[in-house]
Image (tube, rainbow, N blue to C red; front, side):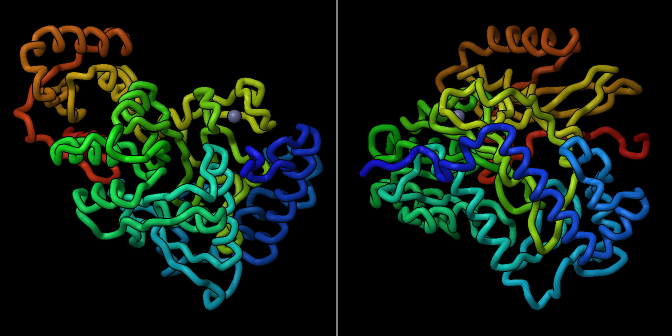
Length: 421
Ligand SMILES: [Zn+2]
């Protein structure tokens, strides 16, 4: 059967002027809804002297005050459990989720309605369909199905599109690999770290996923690595499949950007829906993600939606200052991943007397041991070159000593005394 290559052919190819009319209309409607229903936004808008009717052009978005995670947290602490952000009665909710289980911060609790969930899955439909998933596909979710939102929305998107969903919930990696092969799975949804882990596990089991499985697409989410070319290349070779990046925000429960099947090196912004959920309206929310916007014309797929070249390039929060030089974990990872001889790694920041030090602890892949000296020198040079000459220490760890992650990887350890920051 032949399908349109777009999930929503009208909106995905809307001329820019019409797209902006739609964006303005939706933004204004959301601001009116938030102002009328949510004490948080009433207070927020009033303090900034902003009224929804001031939105006459898209430029007026600047009149809307920024909303931060910190303000949200304050509201939660003052009025447990959900703060004063709910736009409707809690009894109207059908689902409860936590925003994040990884960063060590207190998670934010969210409620969503049926309408929100319809929207959450619709956003994933844009991305999954855009990367080539069709009703004939069997989609495997290498995901824990817990309170963390993760791939929940993608699960419902596949149902909506008519693809076969195979939920790989609470199972071992071995059991998941067996299912992927047995069921003739064509698409796997996973974090980049876990996709790599599954491939390594399969190798130990004597299974070559590129040859022994029918997987031809891997949908990546949850970590910025899905748009790091070296990681993508490694995963595409390992799985013998095309790997597509998507990125969202746990706070909105779904994705905002996706890589289309043309793989232009960027991720399209879902521009007809750039505004958040209805139950907890998020307006001009500071994501602190670092992106580089490029025009729609940089991709050949025909969508009129602009792209973020290289996906999410990191988070402002993640930046570390070492002896006056900015270090972004993602940039360091991009360099390390160029080395096929390196398996797991950790970025370790510490203090020696009064000076900050950065050490890359790494494990050498079996079979690459005799290349170590050469690798160490070259890596040290590459890292310094990309960081204004900053000296990186390299420390080789015994194989298996570093933590190997199944879900979101935590490869940065900042061991500097906290009180001084
Ligand atoms: Zn495209």
